[in-house]
Image (tube, rainbow over all chains, first blue to last red):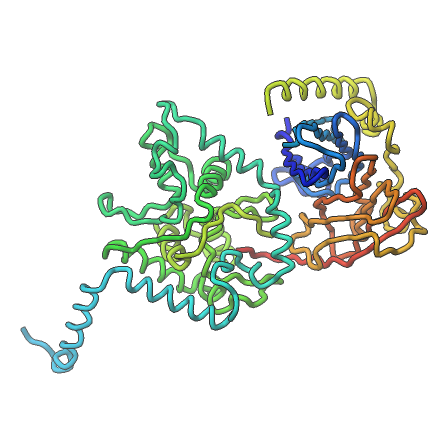
Length: 104
Length: 282
Length: 164
């Protein structure tokens, strides 16, 4: 069970700057297993979607080159206080996570 | 009493020096050490504000410093700090908490540690203080080298003192003895590489070694634990351990008297600098 | 973060796990479940581009070989990446009609790092942290309604043993 997504939103005029941290090992499959044989199996977030009041604004496809505990920042235009911003991810094991937060 | 003529000649001087040592406040010698180091670094790196020494090697490199700020804006190790916060907030079985047990609720106090407890006749580090809380409330002490308990707990607890100026006191002869022991270790060459702490972090500070700018000893103690590579937690004692391994010495145990003494001296050097615990390092 | 969020998350998990049970293979799994809504807006995952082992093949598979270098694509990255596991990158497009931002790291085992499809309502800006296998050119490609443009930057990766 992954740690929850963390999100921070700041509103400047009608632009919401959204900073997201998605706890995830982002294993490349190239890292030697620290305990035991072989390599740590590949396991990474490959798809991220952000919505603004349920309307998709960002759809991202990722490779294993994104760092561990991925950080993502994006800016939503036409935002106002009380709006809902949500971020979801899905990884190569089919696991997923989602967090919704309100613009303050 | 028979005294050699040579000794008789210098005896008045010895007596005077001894009298000065007794009369002077105990902080005098440490304050001289700190002042000398500050003056030395400031003449070597003119124009660098003293507070910038808390950035270690980053103080010499604006681009690296900017990358550090980018990462600190939302650091990848926040889940670890959250885990530390959960440990901090979870009451002991008797219902009490760290905040109940520590002075000032544990806020803005980390810069006073290590401190010498004259009654208990021991040097107390911040991590020992946290463990004292546990012991006094019927909980088992954490191991000083356990990343997932003491590591994340102290990473969070120290962050409650962010911005506090380091204020280490050496105010008794016993305290001075521990300080001097740490100072001696700081300058002692050890390991197959035959390096002392001072060789790298005083003499060679600011130079490039192993493709890295060596950080000055001044300021180092203000920002631990660090998260190297974004998530690898190093307490100050874990960092000492790594240093000793790198010079191919047999490391002391984390939480040992030797490391506590070293931390006492090392922390004193940073007196007056602002704490910023739990930061990113490459 | 209330309990309703966790409940919502569980629902999502069940949906995704259910979807996984019904489908075989990662790509099939990616195209189902909670992300389906967005799928209607954006393209499918370009598997050949992500799988390509060298930059030219990745660019070709992504269909951006003919992109034009443009100062309106702003790629901010450190000149020297002190830790190759965490390199903070920002990409901004000043071009009208920006639909996608693609990021490539020339020397990575698979150079295509990420694709960000910019849907209406989002500024053409993203920041992300990536791993770099070694010193290399980073390339940001922007797809607009009218063309393909890029910016590139050399980032040197250093490896060292100390940090204080």
